[in-house]
Image (cartoon, rainbow, N blue to C red; front, side):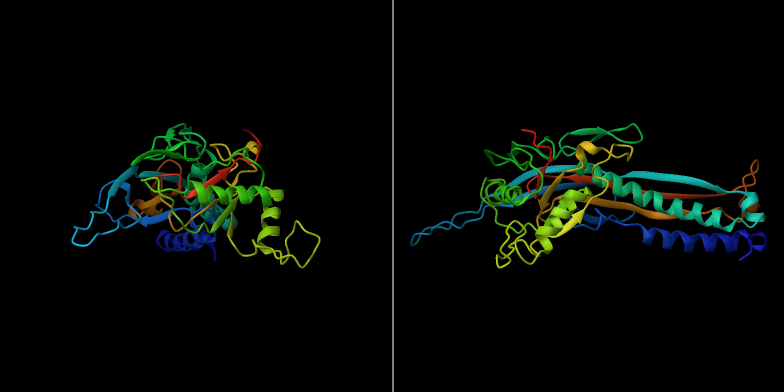
Amino acid sequence: MELNTISLAVFTRLAGVIFSKAVDMVQKNIRGSGLFVEENILENSGETRDYTEIDLELYADSKPQGNQAGRARVQLGYNKLVTAKRFAKDIGITYEMRRFNKYPDVIRRLTNLAQMPVNRLELNLSHRIGFGTATTYVNKDGETIGISVGDDLSLFNTAHTLSGTSTTYRNRLAGNPQLSKGALEGMERLVVEETLNSFGEKVTVSFDILWTTDDPATVNTALEYLKSVAAPDFVNSGVTNVYKGKYKHVILPLVPTTAAGVPNNAKRRYWGIASSMISDAHLGIWEAPHLKAPSDLNAGEEFSTDDWNFGVREGHGIGIVTGRWIKFSSGDATA
């Protein structure tokens, strides 16, 4: 297709096709992992969502003959108010690109534009995990983002509180070991002993996700445990690997990054397990990524530059209510 013969209307339609294909091509590592519960927010329904935990006690009481049945206790737990935030980027398609047949440059610009909001959403979600030992972080725009959970503590903590009892629980593994068979069993012990409802009662639920960064050693260890037929730690090939297929392995390459998306090797061995069944990490999509194209008015050109300006817009909000659905180790052997 010759760019020097294309009209603005035709080019705008072409840009929309390129945009849609480019969005579909982006790897959604954390968004499609099962760690976050995604909700599409209807238009004109407000810019906030309040996510609240509500627990019902687990066990019935005995009922002597003729006595009235006891009333079940319901506990309103913690909540997180999630507010929509918009993200945007613009580019220009220059006169020279349109007239001198620089088609590859145009395609690259539109493809990169389409991927920017999807990448930013991946980064924002990943930083909820990567900065999960803190209650705030300063994002790549220089804004301070509050990321505490409902009890006002960091997502990964050794003394999370419960709304209906003075009992506390931890979801950070003591000693913060690297991924290994012993460490994974320790993580599973956290599931058994430290997964509680608001009354402090033990919750029995499946943890189905093993998540890691993209550190090769950690990834390979995870693959050994999840895909080996025999137990990797034993020479005897007749020993069953009890972890084979037990978890879905999710690799989160943007967790070990700075706020700007630059590699942060201090976080390269982060790992943990999570339950998609009880996850209360919420992602609200107020505005799906979409292309903002120039109109036919005045040929869609910027007067001073002769550019055709295209933009991308997207809006979302993120909030995590509790830390009980996820367990964590920083993998650096700190106390």
